[in-house]
Structures are given as structure tokens and as C-alpha cells.
Image (cartoon, rainbow, N blue to C red; front, side, top):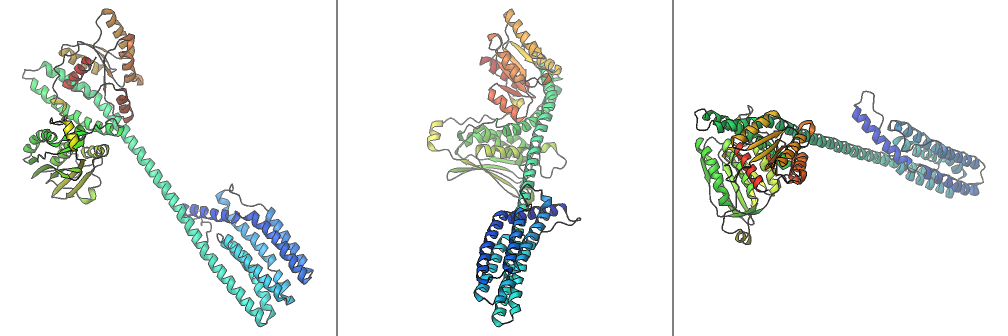
Length: 602
């Protein structure tokens, strides 16, 4: 198998591959070029001297001089180096083939000078030298078939024909042996050339595959980063007006309380809260990707965890005429109660969405050092070909129309992220038309851990919807300074706070906030709380501005950050700052609760 330059109409990729293989062959042959030539010159001098001393034939001196001149030409002629471009590989392959053929043709003359003397010892020495030279050269010339043939055939044929020309039985036998050796040498050389070429092609093809795989991985990473940036930007841009709507709606709801028009305000806020919950779900993905959420494992009593889950989903199951069974187990596990609650909540939510008859069952069983928490449903099931995609963001089975009642398709993606974060493997088994079975494997809590936890149920910190939050019984701050660059949000926030008897003052930039703080200090009526947006006008960083303002003039004004950010890098930065933060859209009850808690912690 010889590697030749590709034809003009050959595929570009195949031509490039052939050029790379040929370059490696040329490099292999030229790697011993200099030392081989010098060794050959020394051997010619020694061998020629021995033959001349025995035969005393002057013609041997002319042959010796001609072969030395050929070696000198070979040594000093320009040769291939690694700096040569790949496109020149075919030229250097042809040149080395011509050079070794020249040396072999000059060598082919010597049998005709030695064999006719009928000196059997010299003839035997000649055959040994030629056979050894062919064997040594063949191994170094395997990569290039023209060079292999060019070196071995002339000198071997010169020896074979010189022996056969003598005509007697001994010389004919030696000629036949030489011919057989030549054929075996060429056959072995062709085979080795084929193996070398195929191994190099396989190597380069694997390198090309690895390079393409690397490019695909890089493209996938770029696409993931672009998706994250898009979600962050889109989420932030959607949260800004939604935040203003939520604040205006909350103020309107508060003003219309106990009036007939208040029902419409309540409906408005339910719709706003539902949209906010969808955005919060997307934010959860960004939080998990950013590493903002850190688990706090502790002994968790599963019955105390199952009870709020049952309360949360019982009404929905009843509305769909499904049976919901959440069975007590008396088991304890070692996990983060809030994050485990979120995992199970998402699994139950997913089960109820895709179940139209029958029901959903939640159980827990101890298996050795682990507890299997299982969520089973009798829903539509998952086809085998789609089972690998159910944990992808926004992927939903049989929902091409994006029915909003089935959510966003992020719930199981969050389950997978929480599974990796907590180290709780999630297993899935499903039969289309028969239902799906999810299993969460959680470490069992040891007896000492249970004793240390006491008899009180582990806190589940049930994730209630924003609308179900209750305003803290703590006192609300009397004076609040708001820093936000958007006029609508400043107006909505001040309107809401003033409806709750809070003296609210709003500014659009850091300079205005600093001036307001100084004036409040001069008047002896300092602000009890600073509310600051993360993104301010002209790219200003609200976190840095808020931290500077909260410590201005030696005062220690409590800081509460409000943001619509979903960027993992920015979320990680907020976490590291340890500044309390609320995510837009902020519901009134949650805002007032957080304000009271931050102000009291002063």
C-alpha cells in the first residue's frame, strides 16, 4: 500500500490525510540519513580494501572511487528537515528514492568484478555483505516502497545475474538462493509498509476525531454559556416590569382591601405570583449552576418531611380526582431538609402533571445503609427512547403546544442538579401507558445522629408560594431609602411602603443616595434600612454601591439587596458578600418580612 498524492478531484480530507502520512514516512527514512551515509562510506573503504588486497584487480579501485563519490554526493546534497512544508513531502520521497537507487546501482557493479575470479571465499563474503546490507536497509526503507525497491533490487539483481552467468551448479544454486531472498525481502517490506501506513492513518484519524470531539465539546460549552447568558438577560428584563407590576398590584390590593373591587386585585396578584413562580424556577437552575446553594446535611425525620408535602399536593390531587398516598415510615435520613424537600416536591409535582387517572404514591423503605424514597404514578409513562432526555431543561413529553398547566419542563432538571449536589442518586423506571417510578437513594441517619437531633421533627422549611407568606410580627422599619434606577419601580415601591406607614425616600443613583443619607444624619432622622437594586444605570454595580453607602460617614445602615439577576457569576458574588438578597419579582408580604428581619438584625 503506497501513499501517493491525491488526485485533483480527490476529497480534500483524504488528500490532507495522505500528505500527513507521507510526511511521517519521509521523516522516518531521513531520521538516520546522515549517520547511515557516513557508516556506508566507512564500510565501503574497509570492504573495498579487503577485496582489493585479495584480488589485486585495479578495476576495483575505480569502483571504490565511484561509490565513495556517490556517498559524498548523498551526504552533501540538500536533505529533508522537519521545517519543510507538508506539501513538499512527495518531492523529498522521490529524491530519497533516487539517491538510494543511485547508490545501489553503483554497488550492483561489484559482483561482476568479484564473481568472475572464481574465488569462493570472496564470493561468499560478497553475498553476505549484500544480503546484510539489503536486510539492514530494507528495515529503514519500509516506509517508502520506491526507496525499498530502488535500493534492494539493483544490487541484488547484479549479484544474482553475476552468479547465474557462471553457469555451473554451485553458482546457479547461489543465484537461486539470492533470488528467493530478494523476493522474501520485498514481500516482507511491502507488508510492513502496509502496516505502517494503516497505523499512521488510524492515528491521524483518531487525532482528527479527538479534535472534532474537542470542537463539539467547546461548541456545546459555548452554547450552554450562551443559553445561561440569554436566560439571565431575558429573566432580568422580564423581572423588571414584573417587579413593578407586583409592587403596584400589592399597593392596589392593600388600598382595595374589604371593597368589592378588591377581588379583581387579588386575581391580578395571583396571576403575577404564578408568573413570578415560573421565573423563580428558572432562577433555581442558575443558582444551582452557580454553586450558590450549599447543602447543610443533618438528621431528617421523613414523616415530618412528608406531612407538608401531603398538605401541599392533596388539593391538586383532589382537583384532578387522583389518589395521593404519602405513607409514614418512621425512618430518618441524613440530608439537607430544604433541598430534599425540593427534590421530592418536584418529583410529586411532575407525577401529578402527567397522571390523569389512578394516583401517586410516596413511600420510604430502608435498604441496608440507605433509604429508598420512591414516587410512583400511574400516568402516561416515558418511552424508552425519551428516557435519556427527561432531565434536560424545557423538555416535556407529549407537550408540543407548551401547555402551561404542565409547567416549564425544568422540574426534573432541578432534581438532577440537586441529586448531584446532595449525592442522592436518582433512579427511574417507566412503562409507557402504565406509569413511572422514581427512586431517590438517601443515606440512613445513624442512631447517635437521631439521638442528637432529639425528638423534635427536623425542620422542613416548607417552600410555600410567595403569596402564602405571612408578614412578620416584627416591627417594620420607620424610614427606608430606596436606590433604583427605574422610575416605575421607585414609584411602585414608595407607594407600597407608604401604604404600610413606612416613610420611603427613593433615589436613582449612588450620589443621590449619599446626599439623602447625609441630610438624614443632619436632621437626626437616619434611615433604618437601605434597599438597593443590583443593576444600576450605566453599568453601575448596586452591590458595591450599597456596601459603600451602608458604611458611609461611619453609619451602619442595614442593607437589603434586590435583584433580577440569574447570572451564575453574579449570584456567586452576591453569596460571597453575605448581603441579604431578594429576587424580583418580590411579593409584598415577602418584602415586608425581609425588611423587618434585616432592620431588627441591626
